[in-house]
Structure formats: structure tokens, C-alpha cells
Image (cartoon, rainbow, N blue to C red; front, side, top):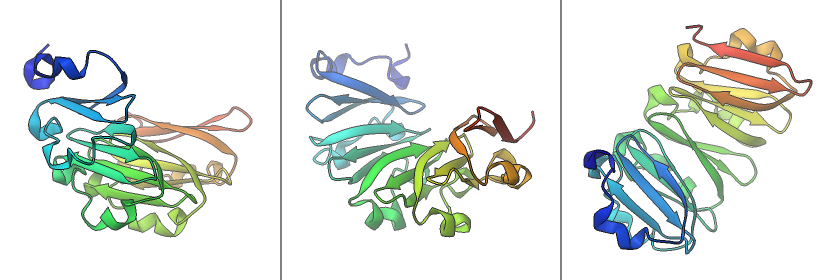
Length: 214
């Protein structure tokens, strides 16, 4: 494939010859997680292939890596999050940095933002506001008790331990779930998002949808 998209990994072939357990991607770059807990990146530098500034933090102890459009986020043992790539897409956590130093269980992404789920069920977000990087409007519902987070292209949906769904991000792309609020108050077991909408599965097997109709 195109070298600018990560189609040529020959310069780092020796690092990819064995021991890789998973690969994450942005639009133009890849990040491989090895069994030793290190991360190897290649592709377009500004889209996350250039991880030099955090190389020491990616040398070991990484347990998961996710990528959005132009940035990556890696979770380390102990719950620290390491980010790199385009700063305004989440490569720089900025004001969220202190909350990402420990205790993070997992990270989800939209196209240009990230959402971290912490031990205890609190949610921390960063990245572009119009893609769910600013969750302040839903903060009172995200302070604890969240069990999973799903990202669409422009918004996020969190499922709480009670089965309630909390959404934020671009309102016309699933960030506003008020039209389906009565069905999302309880009993939801999982949610999945796409470019403009979300679908939730309830305990009885019924599906509830919201977001852009077309």
C-alpha cells in the first residue's frame, strides 16, 4: 500500500518480525503492541507514526493501544495513559493530563477525541469538542458507575452499572439522546456507534436507536 499511509514497514521490519500481539491504526499510521509491552509505530509522522517524544514511556509496560483519526492513546500497567500524534485530536491531553497518570482501565475513541474509563467508573475526556472531547455537560453522570464506553465518529455513549446510557458530543450525531431517553434510563447491556448514530441492546434483547436518521 501507500508508504504515507503505513504501507511500507521495511524500515522497522526487524521490530515487527515476531512478538506482536495487536495493531492499532489512525488514518495514516499504525502502532504495534508487542508481547514485551513496547509499542512500534510507522506511517505518516503527524498522524501518530512519530512517537519519538514519548518513546521512553512506550518502551515497556503497555497493555493496550487505540487510535482515532490522527492520534494514539496507550494504557500502561497501573493505568497511566500515554498519548501522541495530532495535539488537537487528543495527542496532547492538556487539562486532562493529571487525571490520566493512573487508574485508567480502558480508552475509547471517536474520530478526533478520546474517553478514558477509570477504576471506579469515572470518565475522563479530551480532544476536539465537536467530537466528544468535552463532556462537561454530562459530568454529573460520568463521575462514577460507568462500566463501558462506545465511540461513534462525533460522539460517545457510556453505559452505567445501572444500565442507564449517558451521551455527549455532537448533538445531531448521537450526542443528544433525549429522543430515546425513556428507553435508555435502565436495562441497557451494550451500545455501539457509527458515523452518525448509536444502537443500544437492552436486557430483553430489544434494540433502541438514536442519532442521525440518514
